[in-house]
Amino acid sequence: MDFEERHQCKPAQRGHVYAFAPTFQDGSTLRVHLRNISAICLALQIFVADVTAQDNSKPRGLAAADLAIVNATVLQCDAQMHQSDAVAVRGGRIIAIGGNAVAAVIGDSTNVIDAQGQCITPGLTDSHLHFVGLGQALQMLDLSTATQWEDIVQQVKAAAGELPPGTWIEGRGWHQSKWSKLPPGDVDGYPVHQRLSDLVPDHPVLLTHASGHACFANAAAMRLARVTNGTRDPRGGEILRDADGEAIGVFRENAQSLIRRAKARSDSRSSGTAREAALRKQIELAGAECLKHGITSVHDAGSSFALASMMKEMAEADELPLRIVMMIRTGFDELNGRLSQESRIATDGNWFTVRSVKVSIDGALGPHGAWLLLPYEDLPTTSGLNTVPLDELRRIAQLCKRAGWQLCVHAIGDRANQEVLDIYEEVLGDSAGDDHRWRIEHAQHLEASDIPRFGELGVIPAMQANHCTSDAIFVAQRLGQRRAQAGAYVWRSLIDTGAIIPNGTDAPVEKVNPRVSLYASVTRQLANGQQFYPKQCMTRAEALLSYTLWPAIAGFQERSLGSIELSKRADLVMWDRNLLTCPAEDLLTAEVVKTILDGKVVYQADVQ
Ligand SMILES: [Zn+2]
Image 1 (cartoon, rainbow, N blue to C red):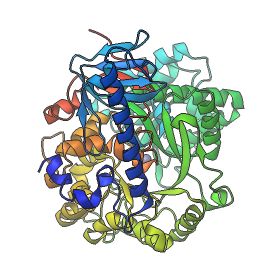
Image 2: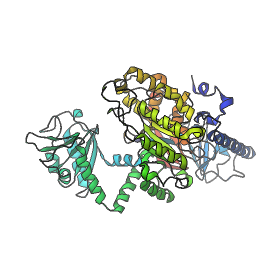
Image 3: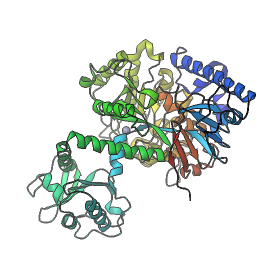
């Protein structure tokens, strides 16, 4: 079934713009105001068309556009997936769509870009990532391509040459099984620290294993961590030692915290100004990385009030690299008394928004942490972990409801999802049909009877399609075929219940590259070529909406963002191929030609 067929089935009842909004029980606020927006848009479109009819060369009644993109394939990503051939922008907003209307607003001062047929989409939104974490990850050395330990030693040595002594050097992604030869003097295949410690004596070094389950430290780091031959293994962890009982520099599982705490102690000794400078650098790096991939908005999945106030100031000083919606992540005690209508943040121009709370109630499926209704198939002694008590979640939910804040709960296992849906239903009670837009982050594994509840309650499953194809390899192992088929990443079933799915990557857990999630959304194809229950694929149009209009709705921003419609903010991406019609494999290699944020070109690919 193609997009039109799938979504035009009940046009009379569902109107048009909100065909993708959550199905509320009572003809709710969201529907009503989306209907109003579409009426306003229509009126504006007619206004622009009138101007066009009067004079094709010079705008009359309208000032000239700052920017016009002509000769393009514009995928508007509004609810009907309209297409047009041109778009014009003034003052950061879209003022005309379509060749005639755009021609009418081109003046002497207009920067006209001839797209030569290339594809324009709205700026993409990653609806679940960790923004500062992404910046931090980008500051670390990428050790994943090393073919032997000596490569890593040289990478660290080069980095040390650029940094003042005493500065920590961090890296990530090393994996001894990827190396072509054993490190000299290895212990169980792991490297020993002496050579690196000799070459880099004055900089503490912390290198995280690709799995995240171990790290490597040099002598300087171990000194700061006060690790000696006498240090005992912490519970749930192991300090790897040589035959003489000396720590070789590798710390498994909980033993990593010895080194990580030492790093945290060093960080906390730096001045407030130095810490803020470091944060700003991370924000800058993460922003540049997103813009390079066509991402103009992000939903940050959980940060502190302190970071929120710093980012608010940055937004007001016009210093944020892109648009950020931040969820606040903290316990009930800190939230209590701080949540109110007034304490929500919405800076001018949609640059920075805070109006949601993030809670995490279980772990991940890989390490058997996702909270399940029945035990793990491959580890029947456990059904996973409940990480925040349900009563605390209930109290936070009540607080959010009273204060008019959105709630976004991380839930991966079917038990976790069911408990969250139960609490949402209980707390929202009769008002479940109102415009709460509460979300479940990940919503990866669902009990079949819980699937329709998303549509019924208007709960938004915020899912990262890249997790599906990277985890698929062990999903059936952990859950068994029946549970995997019935409830794993059931995008098709969820959308068919009326739910919208804002997409993303969970960076830096995975790379922020949206192409991987777009491709996974429409193919569910693993690296080994297998498809993971392909009946649950999204259509191509749905995949595009999951990165554009649906995140805007999930962030309460569909009046201003998410689609190419008149008067919306001019966040646009030019691609080297048509994302709606290119072969699915081409989604992985599609190149961003330009990223335009608020009407300004903020990223431009190198011209070959
Ligand atoms: Zn996350």
